[in-house]
Amino acid sequence: MSRLTKLLRSIVSMKQGSMKNSFFNNSNTSLGSARYPRGYWIKAGAESVTLCRNLKVLGGPALGTTGFTGSMFLNVQDRIASYDSSIIFDDSTGTWINYLDSGSASDPRGTIHHELTHAVDHHVPGFITFFDPEWGKLNYPGFQYGNSYDPKNPPAQKINPVPGLVSYYATASHIEDRAEIGRATMARRSTYNRLVRICQTDPIVAAKVRKTVSEWNQFWPFPGAENTEWKTRMIQAEQDCR
Image 1 (tube, rainbow, N blue to C red):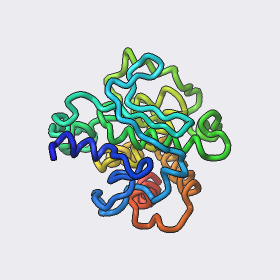
Image 2 (image 1 turned 90 degrees about the horizontal axis):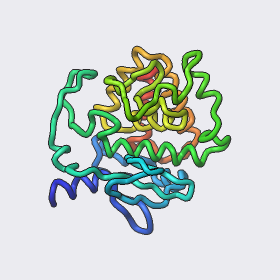
Image 3 (image 1 turned 45 degrees about the vertical axis):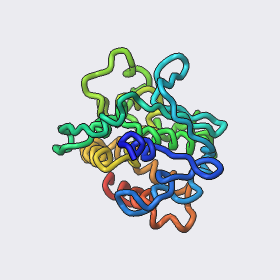
Image 4 (image 1 turned 120 degrees about the vertical axis):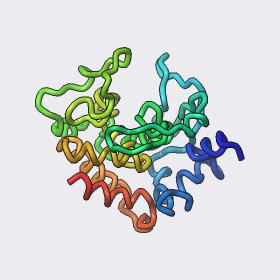
């Protein structure tokens, strides 16, 4: 099996009927457990995943998108296999990491968690996707989404560029802010370690992580999740971001 094939399978591979695979439910993760509880994706309404090349949304390039109809689209960048074999130094954690783990814009695996967070938000009571004043109250006084976001002129510091925001993309809207917290919480270990570092110095991000964990535990309160990476991260994140 080629490196590219292995990597694509680690991003997403389709299953029986719709979407079951090694990513969603398998025993080949870093923790030796399933990534998400069985049925989690179904409750989130995610019915299909389509891998795309040069994905665009509203005329602009996109890493992924999730609709209300249950369709998820993920962009697969050119040369992804060669990027997966590249190692770079991460200043924020002081460790060597895979290039694809260096930031949200370069991490197709993190995009899956980002889009799944959108899907969960679409299927919880209270129209959180459109209106979530409690989330907005967590930000510092006077902060407004969109004022700091200009995709044509991004800042040099894209990770935690503004107090309370885990990434530059999170400054675009509260919808993306929620999804970026979800991405960082469930992404690979190096990304999660970076989130924990941010939580240690940014109480707003820490509060958003705790709120996300609380909401996700309400979304999935069912037994049987104990041996999943999702449940392990819920416990870890609640402790690490106190």
